[in-house]
Image (cartoon, rainbow, N blue to C red; front, side, top):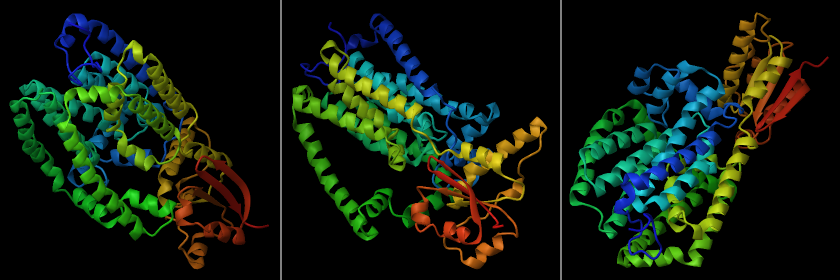
Length: 509
């Protein structure tokens, strides 16, 4: 029997050779996968604590600081379920350094490597699995979110586990795979609402495996039978106030693509919403027609399609363009929605470029671009520098200083670092540079009138005005607060950091 894996001249794309699971063929794969895992883990641990926590990471800490019973009872975050915050609550017992806090995400993100390998091996053999595992290990998008104190890497790990159990259940039905699918799919939904996107992924895999005549009726029946149990396990959360708030939030705000179109074109939100709706209405029939065409094709057509130069070079260019986009420090609100789905895109790339000598040049280019992109993300792309801002304020501040933050919600990461600096100064036994009164807890906005601002400014008081330079374009585009402070005080110090600008104002002599 030949080498297991995908062959472009094979009649069965994504075919699993019977010898793949033999001990003789598995041994070298274990060594190779262990190497890939170590490389992926090393990238995710590289300078893990070098960047300060930004707003969303500070939000994670804030929610995780609550007792688990409150997180599961009513919820504090109206945009996310509670499982990640519960796990983080106990992880905080290990320490509060940036490295320790993000280590949980790095470990979860690294486990995506062997899970991705196992999934790809189940679909197409060892060669497909090796390409996919390397792409997952080096992916700039996955490395970046494995260094975030957020739920996305946990969702990634659980999503791959759920789809792996699902595929094995369809091919070789077993009670263990069925229970694992129920548990991992439920955990995914309790981690992030975006886990619902795994349903169309599973439907697509059913179509693919049915095309190969590899599904079993019992497996499909068990998959369908799992969903009522998943729904029952999820029902307690569906009835919570937090879920009701999430539904209201989704109904009262425009989808993010609509906001992006309205902001960047610029066009009215109503017209942007029309364009997005039109795109969706067009996408549905196109997807149905494409799916019908796929099912009508003979199996060998897929291999000829994957072997064509047009597809191979086109996919290579698309991959390189996406790698560049994942490195650019923009669009994080969109990128984070793709984290748990991106491995399935990498699996497609691995299908077109399986691990074989004939693909050594394109694979070398793909992996080199991924590695360089990940290193750029880790070493050069900064996060919002709240730690450095707090350190500067502590060094140059005085007791009684007020700090105005615009937008007000960005006070969360700044206050976190100010409190940490306060505690460490106290532990060292030296004088504390500031106290809690120094921080103005009330949100500051450009809509405040002059009397409101005057009431908040005590006689002889110095004021730190801290702008988040990206969000302020939307909330205070004319910098009215800066103009008001310039009229009443004088700037005496200024700090410019990534996405942050801090100016110290003092009374005029």
